Image: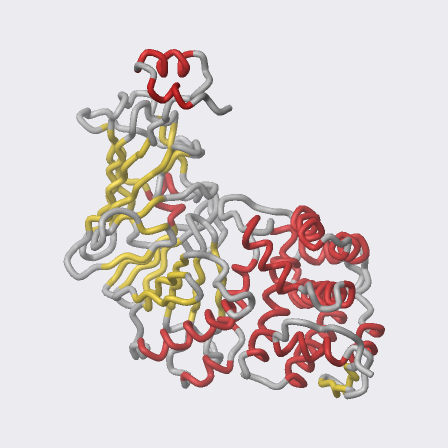
Length: 488
C-alpha cells in the first residue's frame, strides 16, 4: 500500500495510529544471545558463558549424546544453583537477560552413547573438538534471533570454526547461523595460523594443524586454491561465500589424502586428512580436493539420497580436472567409464535407494557414487541435446545457486530434482529419478555412448571422431559455452 505524500509530513501521532491499526509493522529489534568461549592453555577444558537477550530459551541442547558426560559443571550466574543435564539444560530458573556458565572436558575421547565417530582428536599440539560435544545452544532460533560466539583464547592459541566471522576486524567473533543444531560441525584449537584463500568471490579460511614433519603451508595453500578454482570455474563463482577448510596431517595410508569429508553444521566446511610426507605433486594430481569442494555445488542432501550429492561430486571431479588441463578428454571419459563399470558390478540385486541406505554398513559405496555420477552425466547430455547446448548441468547448477542454495535446510533428491526441472523447463530430472532410483539395474549407457562416440576398450575408452554428438562430448570436457548442432 502506498500512502499520499502528505502522510510523511503528518504529526507523529498519525504514524503511531497507523502502526496501531496494523498497517505498518513496528520495527523488530534483533535478539542477540552472546556466548563467550574460553579454553585452557593445554586445550583440555572449554568454558562457556552464555548470556541471553530477554527471556531465555526453555532449554539448551547439544548434538552429541555424550555431551552430558563431557559436561563437568553448569550453573546459573549469580546463583549457587547448579543445572543438571537431562538430555538438555533447563533454563526455567534463569531470569530474563540472565547468564549461565558451564565447563566441558575435552581432555580425552568419549564414546559411550554416541557412535557417530570421534568427537575429540589430538593432532600434535592441536585439538579437533566436535561442536556437538561442548556447545549447548537453543534447539531452534527465530529468524530475528541470533547467537554471537566470541573467543577468549590463551596467548598463541588460534581457533578455526565453520561459522561466519562477525564483529569488529581483528576480533574473534562469529555468528552461529540457523543450521539445525544436530548437523555436525568441528572447531579446531591450536598453534596454527589461519590463512584465507579468496577464490571466485568466496573466502575460504584454511587451518593446517600440527604435524610431524610439519606440512609445507605454502604448498598446501596452493593445492587447495587450485582445487577451489576448478570448482569456481564451473560457472564463474565459488558456490558458497565462505567456508572452513581443515587440513589434518599424520593420516595413515599411502595416498596423499587417505580420507576427507564435508560437514554443514554452522556453515560449510571441508576436512582433509593428509599424509604430508607425500610429494606435493601427488596432491595436485589427486581428485580428492576437487571432489569434496564440488559437494558445495548442492545444498545439504539428506543421507538417504547421498547418491545425488556423491554423484555430483564424482562426475565433476573428472570433468573439472579435465577442463583445468589435469588430464586429457580421453582420460577423463576413461575414468568415468571405469567407475561406471565398478558401480555396475557393485550391490547386485539392490535398488539405488537400497544401496544408499546400506552404504555405511554394507559396503555399497561404489554403486552409490557411480550410479549417481551416471545419472548426472545423463542429465548433462540430455539438457545439452534438448536445448542445442544452451542449457547443461553447469547452467542448471548456476541457476540453483541463485535461487536455492540455502545453507540451513536439507533437501531430498526428489525435491531438488523437481526444482531443477522447474529451473530448466524440462522433465529431464524427474524422468531420471523415476527410471533409476527404484531400479535394481544400473543405467544402460550404450545409446548415449554411441551418440557421443565413446567406445569402451576394457577399463579405458576410445573417442570416435565422427560420432553424431562429438561436439557435445568435447564441450563437456572443455567447458565450451554452446553445442549448436550435430557434427557432420
